[in-house]
Image 1: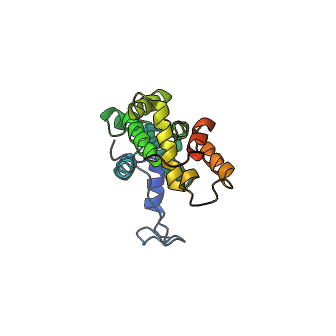
Image 2: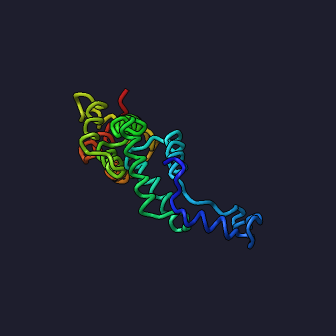
Image 3: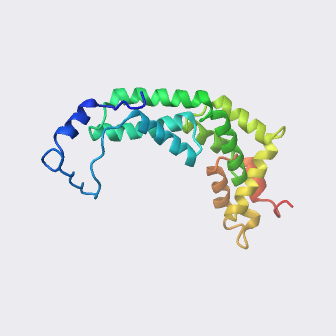
Length: 208
């Protein structure tokens, strides 16, 4: 229910034992200069989820983790029952996913497009999205849609973008040979295979 709180005992305690010492007395400030928070409610948790999604793109699992951290913090402060609030998290996430407020397919497509523009390898993109809880099949579909029929060419384009952004290989003003191994290692760490890395770093000049 919108008005239900995570722990009615907490509400009772706060009503009968105010931090000032007697009922009705203004609460003392916390060490950080803030009055103590009241019990966590399901409505406030849902509002927090909406506010988060207004500011950040998120996967379903990402939203779940954000809300779970809020619940854990409230539980440590004895402002809610951990198990009850965990149930609220699952209900909110399920409803938001069902209504399309959070959508792993759209999230994956957006992240793949933006990260390809930044020069990220398919390997790095897959790793990042898996860490965010996105299904591998959705990641592969998003990459296929972004890269088109020639995934190898798309990977090469991404490697060139990263080289340009970090001034590697042909983008160096001088001492290319001195920095060759370091530049190859930079592309390898970014997830590009050795063949792609060599093609970029050893090229005479950048593509037009």
